[in-house]
Length: 330
Image 1 (cartoon, rainbow, N blue to C red):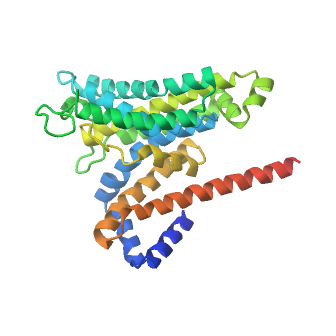
Image 2 (image 1 turned 180 degrees about the vertical axis):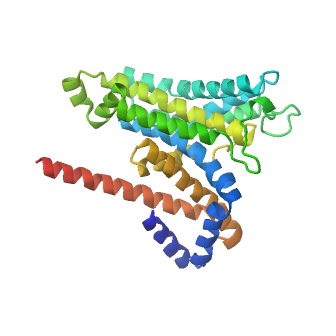
Image 3 (image 1 turned 120 degrees about the horizontal axis):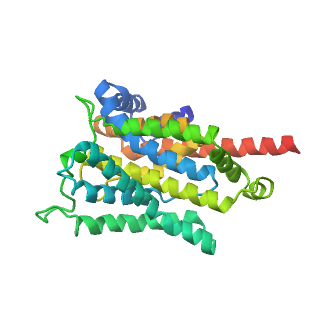
C-alpha cells in the first residue's frame, strides 16, 4: 500500500499537480472527521467487504468468479422488487425479506456459469464475466420498464418502502449493513479454519486433483457450491446497497464494486478478516478520491493507479512465495 501511495504521489507531481495537497485532501475525505469516516469510508467499505468475501470464497476453491458485478446487480434488482411490495410489513419482516431475495438472486445469477462449467467445461471466469454485461443491460431494462418510477419520467425505480430500509446510525449515513459485513467476515473465518467443509474448500483450491485422489473429495462439486455461495454474497451486497444507501434502483448503482472487490480479496490474501480490513482501506480510497477531486482538482481516477499497483504487487509477492516454496520442496 505504501508503494501505491508513492506511485500516486510521483504520478501527481509528474502530471503537474500538488501531490501534498492532493494526498492531504484524500486523507480528509476518508478520515478527516467522524462523519467522513462513517458516512463515506465505511459506507463504501460495506459492499466492498461483502462482495470481497464472496470472491475470496470462490477463489479459495479455485473457482474464478469475475462476475460479482452482475451478481451485485441481480441482488439489487430483486431487493428493489421486494422492497416495493412490503410496505405493509413491519421492518422485522421487510428487511429480512429484501436481503433474502437479494441473496437468492445473486446465487441464481451464477447458476448458468456453474452448469456450463460442470456440463461442458466452460471456464467460469469467462461465463461470469460475460454475465456482467447482461446484468447491466437488465438493470437498464428494469428502470425503463417494469420497475420504472410511477410517473415514467426518470430511469429509476420508486423508493422502496420505509420498513424495508436498514437502520442508520444517527447523524451519519452509516447503516446496519456494516454489522452484516462484520458477521459475515467472522462466519467465513470460522468456516475456513474450523470446519470440515472449509478444509475441503482449501484443499480443492490448493490442488483439486490431489484432493480427489488423497482425500476423495469431489472437487467439482465443492467448487460449484463455492461459486454459488460467492454469488449469493455478491447479491446480498446489492440488496444492502439498495436497502441501506440508495433506497432505489438506477443505472450505475455500482461504481464498480464487483471489480474493485477482486483487489480487496487479493490484498487480503483471501483471508476473511483481511477482507474486512482491506474493504475499509479501499473504501477510504474511494471516499478520498472524491475529496481529492473537489479540493485539489485531481481526477478521481488517479486512485485506480493505487489499486492497480496493489494488485500487481500482491500477485508478484504471491508468485515469488510460490517459487520459493517449490524450490524448498525440491
